[in-house]
Image (cartoon, rainbow, N blue to C red; front, side):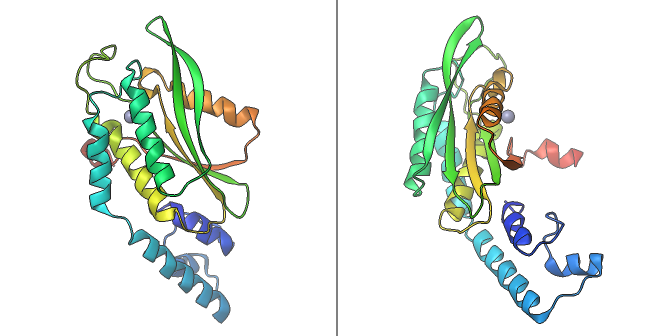
Length: 227
Ligand SMILES: [Zn+2]
């Protein structure tokens, strides 16, 4: 979440680093000095960024995660995945996003043809440079081909989808420098089917992709250990 806001905030002030969260530390490290006007502007942006981050609501994150995990399964071969996709789409539209659509693609899974859907939701910025914030919404159990058993998939990857819905909520009324596209992929567990198909769509449509942030298994403890 922290990465998103500074991208446009720092760009607006033509700073080279998008990783630094502190304007002041950035100034110290590059030995640049700010004029009073610049300082006022950066202070204002930093204050606004913090106010947006403060809107992140852990209870809403929990509610999203619980709702997604309550679907019996989100296996890509299950017809229930259509219900999941509709639920996610309704959440985004309910937040006020009007430019949302399904990206359909054909895939073969276990020798059978399926029509799967990625979910795309656009937030227009001041320019066409695109930041994609994405996650897959399907899941599996130990037996990868089993599309009938209970599979809550809370960690992998209801956590990522839940975070994206919350990011979309806090950014809904923000004016951003770059355009944002929230993308939820299907068929990830069968070999990145959704993201491969959508990457071709990006190329075919010559979209100006600037950054991509993928959320998968958010805050998974094992990742904490290896980091
Ligand atoms: Zn995953």
